[in-house]
Image (tube, rainbow, N blue to C red):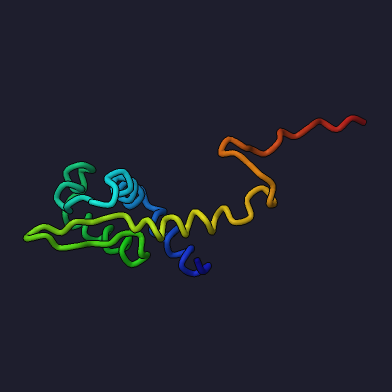
Length: 111
């Protein structure tokens, strides 16, 4: 993933509503959710939801498909995995690490 695409994805996720929408779509899996259900689930007005979905789609984090009169939105797992790979590419300086790895606590210097 290119740096500019990474920045766009992170910017799109850097909003409480968009992050909640994306997380709901990830949880829904590849089938996704219809826009109306997302609005009800997250208590987001339809006009705001449209704006947030547009931003997520622009960052290629969500895709949509028409089924009859409903529009279903799905998380773009390829983009999500690319973003995660970019962020963890050089994790722990190439050494194995675990999800619970944290910076070592600072030690007091002895004089």
